Length: 347
Ligand SMILES: [Zn+2]
Picture (cartoon, rainbow, N blue to C red):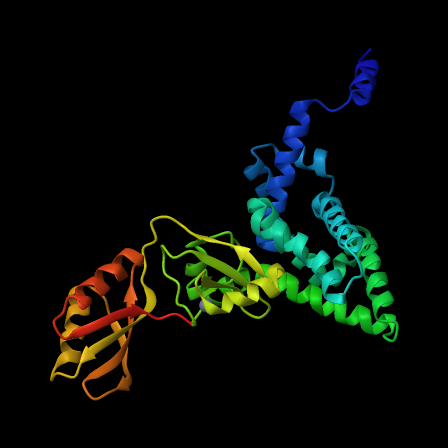
């Protein structure tokens, strides 16, 4: 009798509750494996985060290594489908360039990792672990290589003079840079114990979770500005103002730009720059500096951009909280008797 009951249980499809438990375990495993690597994540911790008994983790995931492979495979299908769909779509539009083929491989991944929420962000780091450790080559082989081969074939067709070996070598380098874009913040955090400028920066820009963020020197964006993120291979995401002259590149390489926005309630100072045209009166520079200081802003640098017979053009590098703060400073400076014009500089 008991044997028969067991048999029936085995044949029954998994219940909704069982599927929900399994997904919770897989989500917890994904998070921990991505944060701590294979060794650092214990079954006990995975069970604790999933809120289940350790035995249930084994029941749903098998051995730890099998669980790890399952977690990598879980999103690999969706990723492959997105990449191959992008390639099909691009091909339907006409003749391809190598750049276009590569963008069909890179962009679906970047898009998911950047905009797909915390789970996909963790998955990006997890893939970086997998691809950097020879132990996991068998996982990469079964999860990613079939799709990679499709892309290599496309590139081979476009570059008939290049050997398959050369193309593969370049492709692997490209994949490493793609992954480092997603993992560099984690790496930098580790090296600097979380005190990097980039780390703090990524906390104030939504849409860049897991990435290194910096502010463009050309246009010095501050909270309140409309901004765009440029995906730079060496420097993660560089945030520019929408009014920046460098956004001309946006039309040329739309695949390099991502939508970003400021977080609310940011508590830090940002570099900004204003240009002040003044009459050539003794002490005018000190007066302007004092007015800026009265607005609780630090001046980091002052330079004279031009000096004419009766007026001078001064440039102030200063620290501000946001657009409102900067607007207040500019208004106060503009109201000074010896000031002719105040403008925020932008490339
Ligand atoms: Zn810019």
